[in-house]
Length: 171
Picture: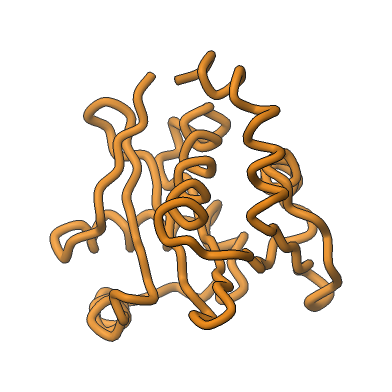
């Protein structure tokens, strides 16, 4: 199994929007409103490419999901990762776990960032479990539905070492 990634291009926006507007994806978002194509285009065109790194991940020739890194504090090296499987056929598939490893390798190793702070819906147990496996630690409640987790580079590297055999086995 080989994870394939590509930077999101304007020609990808329709598939990304279709994935994002699906109930099973939207219901896990802080902003879970249905998004129009015009709003989506405006969002994409407003992105600062130095602070936003957005990818589609695929398995062989099948697009599976979306992942991004949004740098929220460049001086301190703080970022937020977002990832979702948009292809219903691949929910629960190991490719999603590999994509989590990829985006964190990319942010910590390539971009040299230091800390991820992210919000996860507190009833999204699969996302919480995956994030904890790679080293995320509960920080505090964000609101009644979302919790804040953080991950520092050294914790990711420790977890990554423990997961190397699993990563090799599924990739």
